[in-house]
Amino acid sequence: MARPYTVGPSRSPAEVTVDAIDALRTRRSYGRLREPGPTPEHLTTILEVAAAAPDHGELRPFRFTLLRGDGMDAFGEVLEAAYLRRCRETDTEPVPAKAEKERTKLRRAPLVIVVGAERQESTRITWVDQRDAAVAAAENVLIAAHALGYGAMWRTGHPCEDPEVKKAVGLELDDAIVGFLYIGTPIDPKPGREVDLEGLVTEYAG
Image 1 (cartoon, rainbow, N blue to C red):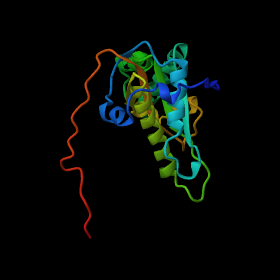
Image 2: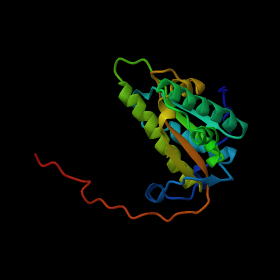
Image 3: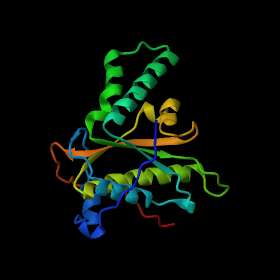
Image 4: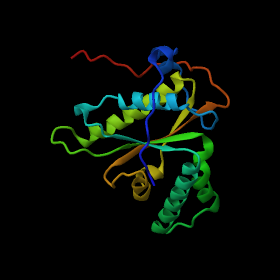
């Protein structure tokens, strides 16, 4: 069951030493992460940066659910139950190893942030724009975590569309989960990769 999170003080911007361009350019994804996870101050900073994402109409549609410790184990049971229910609904024989994976996969990192988009009433701002704001917030989480010295992985899949999983994080059926963001310390840090723009950029000339 989700409960309110008490937000503490954040890390001062002056204490963040990674250049913004470097953070954007060198961020990598890490499938498995270890302790330590973000400190309370770092976590507040990450969440503040997430909530500063581009937000058409300032509707604040993004929602963040934190999974750690016993909460991970409890939510793992939600994920396992959702998998077994999907098997029943599709007349598919459940695979015990997959059920176990659903139950335990959150432990790949010390912290998981579930990023959702809660549909806001608006005659001007489309749902697509609102969902995109949550996607931008998720990207901000990854960049902020990297800038503060952590690693992260953005994961999606069937749980993002599952109504019971949405319900568990306080969302309705027509809301969205845009990702499960795993955050911790990289086991094997990776160097920044070369970015090739070939074939990606055009200029419209009329």
